[in-house]
Image (cartoon, rainbow, N blue to C red; front, side, top):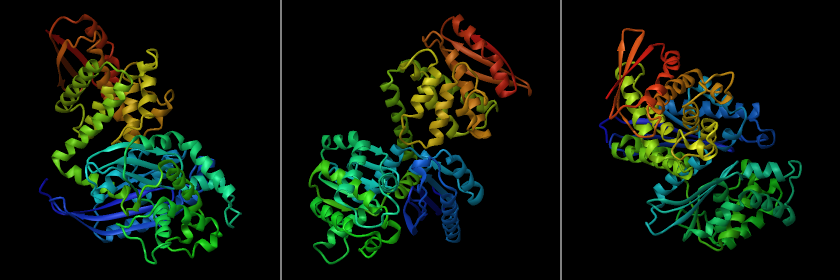
Amino acid sequence: MADTPATTVAFFDIGTNSMRMLLCRIESDGSYVTLTDQKESIRLGEGEFQAGRITEEAIQRALTVGHQFVEMAKTLGATEFRAVATSATREATNRDELVQRFQETLGIDIHVISGMEEARLIYMGVISEAKLDNSDNALLVDIGGGSTEMIIGNQQQHLFMRSVKVGAIRMTNQFCDPKDTGPVSEKQFEKIKAGVRNEAIRTLSKLKQFPFTRVIGSSGTIQVLVELAHRLNADQPVGKDDRVTAAQVRLAIRQILALSQQERINLPALNARRADIIVGGAAIFECILDEIGDVPISISDRGLRDGLLVDYLHSLDDEQSEKDHNYRRESVMRLGRVCRFNEEHAQHITDLSLKLYDSAVKSKLIKADDWMRELLEHAAMLHDIGKFISYSGHGAHAYYLIRNAELLGFDDLEVELIANIAQFHKKPYPKKKKHPNYAALSKQHRMIVKQLCMLLRLAESLDRTHKAIVTGVVFVTKGKSKVKLTVSTSESCPLEEMAVNTQIKAFAKTFKRELSIVFVC
C-alpha cells in the first residue's frame, strides 16, 4: 500500500429511485472510517421508462439532492468524488444532458455503468460484510427502481451474475394506475408478476443451476419485506443475523396488498416514499422466491456504494490493482473467445499497439496516461471480433459486439471508447458527420479515439500477413513537423510495408506531423 496521507472520499450511487452517498476517511494503510451514509429519494426514473427520457423535474430533484450531498461532503473534508449512475440514466436518451449538468453544476463526473457492472459492484459491496465461507454460496438480490441484480457467489468469487430490466418503479409505471391508490387484488398482482417473468424468465430459470444455501437482499424493497416478515413472529426490528422464510415473506406481501397506499405508510419500515412502488418490487421478489423455493432470507445494508469503496481500496494496493486490471483483461478475453477471434494475431497486434504507444509517449506525440494505454490494449485485443458476424464491415460489427457485451470492470464511457477505437482500426477514418457514435463523444474523447485508433491502424498494417514478422517499432521526432517510425523485422515483409505506407496521410491528419517509415531487417 502506498504511503499516503488520509483521504476523504465521497462515493455516489445515483439510482433510479434514490441517490446514496457514502463518505469515508481512508488511511494510508487501507483502513477507513465511515463519516456519513446518506440516502434521499430522487425518483429519477419516474415517467422515464415509457417516454425514454428523464424528465426535467427528475433532473432538478437529482441536482438538488446532489448539491446537498456535495456540500455536506466538502464540509466534512471530501477531496475526491466517485459517482456512478445506473438503470434510469443508462437507458435515457438524454443521459448525456444529466451527466453534463452534474459536471457543470456540481463539479462531479458521473460514470454511467452497465447492468452487469452494477451487479459486480453490488457483489463486492455485500460480500465485504457477509463473510461467507468459500463453500457457502449465497444468492444476492438487489431490487432497484429500474433493474434487479442477481448474483450467486461466495467470499472468493461469483458463479453467476445477471442484471434484468425489472425494477420497482419500472413495474409500477407499466402495470399500476397512479390514480388507483387502494388495495391491490391478487389478480392485478399476478399481472405484475407475469410482466416480471416475461422479462426475467431466462435469468430466473438459471438460478437453480447453481447451489446456494441462503438469500441476501441488499435493497430497500427487500429490507421492507423482510422487516415485515420478521415482525409477523417477533415484535422487534429485524437484525443482520436474523433470517426469515419465503412463506413469511409471502404473508408480508399479502399484508401489503390488502392495504391502500395511505395505510401502507403506517407499516414498520415502509414510508411514504416507497408506499406507491412496494407492490412492483414485491412482485419481483416473489417471482424469485417462486423459482428457488424456501431458502432462508436475510438482509444486508451494504450495496453498490460499498462496492465503489472496495474498488477504491483496491486501486490503492498495487498487487490488488493489478488483479483488477487482470479481471478487466479476462472479461475482454472472454468476449474475444466467444467471438472466436484469432487470439495469436490479436495478442501480437496488442503488443505492437502498446509498443507504439510507449514510443509515442517518449517522443512526445502523446502525453503519458495509463488509462489511455489500457483502453488501447483492450481495443487492440478486440479489434477483429466483428469478423464473427461478417468480414465485410467488421469494424462496425466490432463496435456493436463490444458496445453490447457489458464488459465487467468498465464504465459506460470506457466501453464506448474501446468500441470506437476498434471500429476505426481500418477504413473509414472517424468523422462526425458520418459516424453518430463518434460524434456523440466530447471533443476530448474524440481526440483520444483518433490518436489511439491511429496507433492501432499502424499496428494492424504491420501484421498484414498475420505472421508476426515485425518485432519492434520506435518513433523518433524530427523537429516540430516530422517524425520517423523505424520498424524492426525478422524477415522481409513487402505486404506490411505496403500496408503501413497507406496510413501516412491519416497519421499526418491525426498528429499534425509528416511521417516517414524505415524498415530494418
